[in-house]
Image (cartoon, rainbow, N blue to C red; front, top):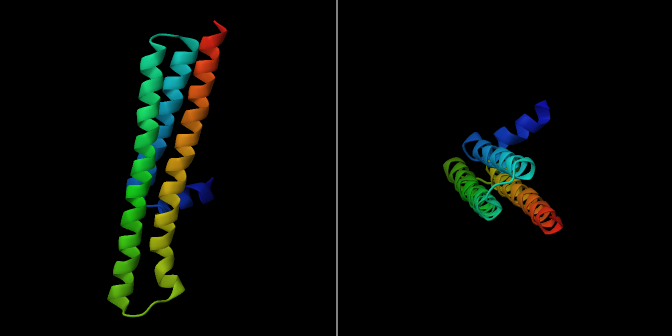
Length: 119
């Protein structure tokens, strides 16, 4: 568990924790709609929008990670692997997590649609 939190911090808490909140929101919406059906189309649409926001937020974090990495290189004047590691971690973790949230959301949407077709 500590390693997972460490990876979240590597991605930059400003970017990874909101993506985690997006994931928890998507799961909550799914559970509410699955067990207490309401306006399914509205819920599916909301889940889609939140999942795309997670992807966009992850790629925004990637952009800031790359900027941070290049700023460190410019400040040091030389390129070393250790110097780039922090910025590159941020550049890789955020989009990966955003895409993971997107895939989870799509699986949950498929489940909701499949459950609707059964009824």
